[in-house]
Image 1 (tube, rainbow, N blue to C red):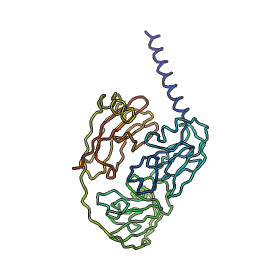
Image 2 (cartoon, rainbow, N blue to C red):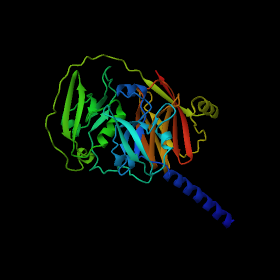
Image 3 (cartoon, rainbow, N blue to C red):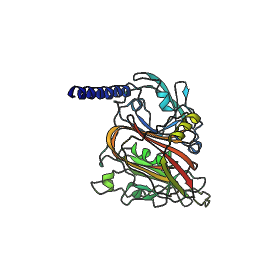
Image 4 (cartoon, helix red, strand yellow):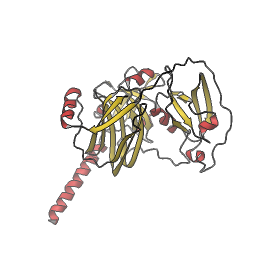
Length: 369
């Protein structure tokens, strides 16, 4: 019996080793990305809506060494331009660590390309920072309607924060941070996270019918919360005024329903759109929830994973297009992220959470009230 147990243990260890080797032998860029809706691609003037919008670049990764930055929009690698059925993840399978490739992307409206030498998953590290090192603007999302024709996000302002000292107020609509357009809330965190404490942050925002611009050295999270000495610059904001016509629009509430994906439906999806969605719900996950419900299109996805393992999150629309992708690396504990679906139509979406070969797939139905 002891011999059998030892054999099973060694076999399991071999499987884990082979999987780890497989993961480490795949080409790795070292970025976190989001897909964009067709509406967002249009607002940003991206001709190809199937690209990957960079939200984070891991330090010392292949992307970091080549100069890829947050807000770069990758739409092609070598001769492989991304399409409905070919995205960044599938194209990367054609390469191994050490391979070279030309990566084509858009940065602030300009088409650029860089030669990249792919690394391994073990290279690069998540940019963990203490509260003293973490830049903090001091804004929270509110649900005030952004006027038609305006690209931006409406915010509330935290006292003693950089935004407060800049002169911003509740219900201001942030249009740009450091010249990057804030199309939705997903754009805010990358714009702030790419900064260092003490650097000057420039915010262009709308108040009433005036476009204003403020500049202020960004202070740390610790300074804002009163846990350390922070910037106490009380300079008045630099205002640039511009008249903008406003239009009143009623916002529709959106309700969300979540259900298990049935095997028959998964087979139909695979046949119709070519996406293989596992229906075996064998991932250990707790407190999986989407809230608030209803909302005006902005939902929080929250869950707890008790086990530490390479983790990925994918969301597909009913056409099989990946609208969200996040590789968390080795992860355990609480996860929460806000999703803005105001630009996405009501309908059916598919949420896949995977750790190694364990997974859970949920059908998420969005209904406009």
